[in-house]
Image (tube, rainbow, N blue to C red; front, side, top):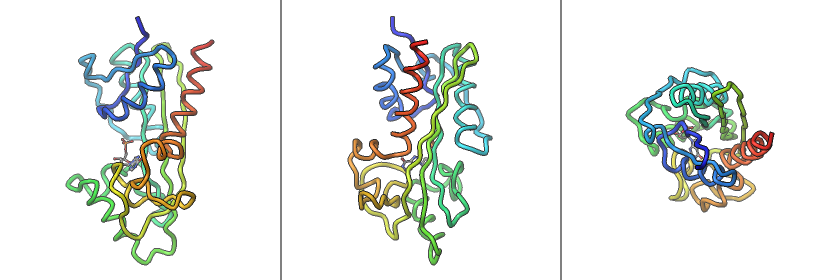
Length: 198
Ligand code: IMP
């Protein structure tokens, strides 16, 4: 039977991405709900890495299985790195994705710089206490208006100069090849491979 790792997320898209990586090592990814686990850890960390670790530790403790979590967000230079770890709740709980990126565009009116980057941190905690971490970053700029219809979150306003496109104008594969999450998952996969060989 395949070894199981719990993915600390309720997002089926993340499960799909992670399952593809883990299956290479004969590992099966399951979600907390599959094990009837509720481990809603409060994301009180000041960094993406801290929050990923908090979530992975909580799920590992509840499940007694290795647990993987990620945390990501958008850091805008003109907003002193904000919304950062608060990206999902930027502008308060009532806004949807579109409301959040429109608020961002408004906040940057007349700003001297539109530079920004996405960061994604991944943490994997094993029941014995071992921890693997990885981080990826993608640099870009906040567009002057939304462009593209694919993706989620801030994708329509995150412009990648090298590609001359926003994330929302890229295919899933194209985005994954340069994105913060794609890079973090690649680094994580390499570290996991080394760890599992030990
Ligand atoms: P979390 O890592 O699932 O907590 O995501 C944090 C928030 O950051 C999301 O709700 C999005 O608003 C934003 N975010 C993270 N990654 C991306 C991305 O690849 N595209 C657009 N928005 C993202």
